[in-house]
Amino acid sequence: MKDTKQQFEYIIAQCRDLFAKKLHDYGAAWRILRPSSVTDQIFIKANRIRSIETKGVSMVDEGIRSEFIAIVNYGIVGLIQLELGYAENSDIDNTQALALYDKYAKEALDLMLAKNHDYDEAWRSMRITSYTDLILTKIHRTKQIESLQGNTLVSEGIDANYMDMINYAVFGLIKIEFGE
Image (cartoon, rainbow, N blue to C red):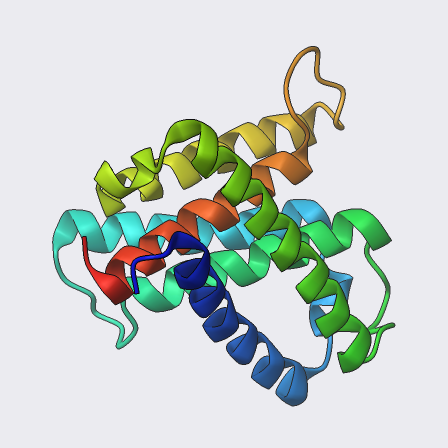
């Protein structure tokens, strides 16, 4: 499978499957998370990936793949939270949550396709470790924007950073799944 769009959709389907299973088990408990807490969750996942990449070993029985999946899913949760605001409880049902997931997964795909056209699939020549570093950079940018309460002078917003984090994580998953 060499078609980027097909590979992206395949990876997103795997991420969505885990998201749906967790929705079954926990409901939309993540609705109580403020966007800054979502950013911190993504940071934890990306930092663990970098730690494993640097140390070359994982002491917990989950590798880089599961953390990239978590970044995709938390990135989509972050976009949902930006749209709806955080709640005091799980205020949406699983069907609504999955519909919102699908909306933002499609937006991420559309953005990737547009950028992929302009950048001519340059991401395929990058190392997975670079995706990790770029995600961490986007997290630090997002934290700064959150500290500024969204009042930036020239920068894209938090939503654009979440989208980029999702896409970099998908690129990492594509390389893990399909190789170089």
